[in-house]
Image (cartoon, rainbow, N blue to C red; front, side, top):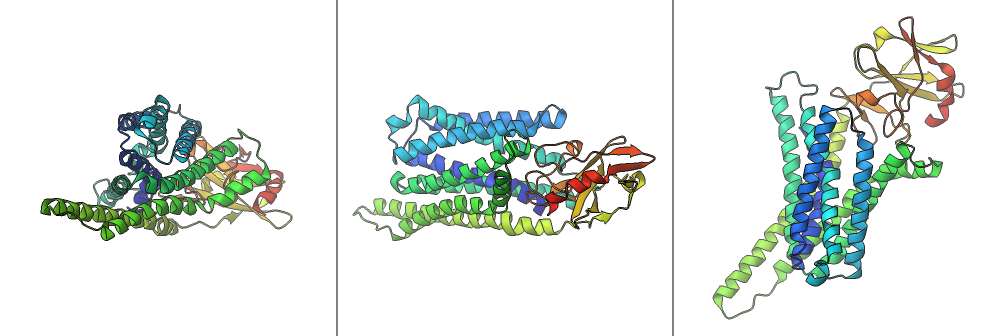
Length: 416
């Protein structure tokens, strides 16, 4: 339950907050011309994400990182344009918002946001039965419940933030929206850099790789930045609702004003509670879930005739096996082996070009990166790119996987 609650929440939470703030800004400024374009963008993003998920599950045609890169670049472009428009005019007039350029940017933003964030939401249900003995069981029910709770939490927090943002004057709301957009933009750029470096689409300069690895250790700061901006919006509205002076001689007008103030206070409190809940799930909850997975210690294998020989019988169970080679300088070079099919094995270092030597572990039959919690596609283990283990050349001879010790020796600097 906790695992899929965390996965679903981590996929949608920040996007829900940013979209909630922006749609609230549109409503607060009475920018009615934008709302149909936002709805059309949401539906377009939903359709693209569903189509991508169907292709990924049913075929081998999809290279997910290239799709994500296209969606990310489109989303970054649209968000930059929105940021510039809103920063230049702190309170857009309906006439400015009605321009074709702003409507188009709003549409692209909503569509690209959905196209990037939603595919995994459609794919996660295909993983429900992984490691489950019987689908008619409490374990399976808890898994489905975790997924549904995460989805509900993100939808509700996005709507609550939308409601509180829409109740504030645009002059008050704009600084918080700009902060959330800027922080979210930085997180998208980090993900883009991760794909570009992992796929070798840009030169892998040491300083760039080190910077990406460093920032990956502090991704919680991006979450806190967006959630903090949203929380301040809710607190601002709560303070205004509590301290608002009720004036007017007409009792009906006073009753309406009091009712409106109570409603705003309730939505503000609800947004704050859901924000805190989401942060707890994404920090404490996910760390607790990660701790439940036992990290199998690497096994040293003897070297003979200048090569490491791993019996096929030792790694033929389809599970992840971790080994270690002692380099001449004393560095422990870790590598992994997994049987992918009846005739194929995946062999790679217990490290990748983006997340460094953090390594991998097995969780419910899935191979997962320890640092970024990305689930590996078994079929791609042994191939270069992305968050996959760095491939290691090997041969199968005499009932064993044979790895030249010189190859492992050359990788020692990666683990220093």
